Amino acid sequence: MRRCAGMVVVAIGLAAWGNPALAQEPYPSRTVKIVIPSAPGSTTDTLARLVADQLGQKWGKPTIVENIAGGAMNIGAAAVARSAPDGYTLFIAPPSPLSFNHLLYRDTGYDPTKFVPITMLAKIPNVLVMSKELPVTTLQELLQYGKANPGKLTYASQGVGSTAHLSGAQLEVQGELKMVHVPYRGAQPALTDVVAGHVDLFFDTLATSVPLYRDTKLKLLAVADLKRARVVPEVPTFSEAGLTGFRSITWFGLVAPPGTAAALAEKINRDAVDILARKDVDEMLRRISLEVGATSTADTRRFFAEETALWAKVIKEAGIQPQ
Image (cartoon, rainbow, N blue to C red; front, top):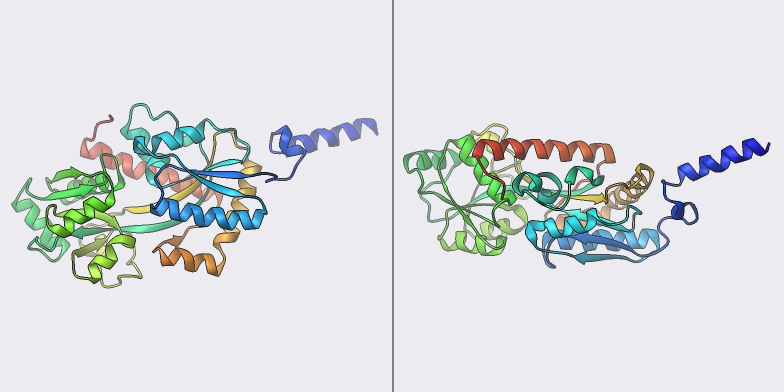
């Protein structure tokens, strides 16, 4: 009997997510911190605060957001990578630090494949935004114009290595174009210069570009997803417009530090997916033009790998060298 009792104790210890502290208390038993790698006011920040508020209510424990911006989002990601794998520090980020920054920077300070995926929280398609000054109205006309005027077209981005930069490089490769990349310090100044006609193109999210499109301040040529966007059903996808398979979406993943036990990740996944399934949360996300993600841990890991493969191919074909 003593031997059997000992085996039960061992089994309980192993089930406690590999962390002695968790064997003595339910999770969470104190404040949970969610780090984001961007400044307050961004879409990532808005989403993270919504998720933190909902998880805090579900858990009955404070859940706070900490902004650690800078370094092409690598500073915040590296800080989380060094955190204890106990579930009390989590990370919400857009694609770059979770899927391709390590392909663009020689020393990011972390390995994104070591993060423990929890769920994709939300996504939003990118759309090719064009200045009204450019004398074209369709993607095919743009491709013809670009081929007839190599090096004349300009495209903006939030900086080297951003999704907009890589999307522009992808357009150059698939469209057989030669364009000039114009990096900015953020999306807003880039979008402002597209409206002013100082730069021709920009891959932007629907959230910020659609209002300007409705006000006829710029053109939308194609949605970079495999299906049309509900908010602008009149705008074709890239595949429909002639570039089959072209895809560029902005998504937001929730991950835990390397070494976080699978059972703990699954528990957080269940709770996050539960709040995302609520109608009021879905409505809040749609108000900021986001679509609910709510993926399993396995599907999240698979999605991250697919995104890494996509952008690795673009980076290689475009000849973008790591910094």
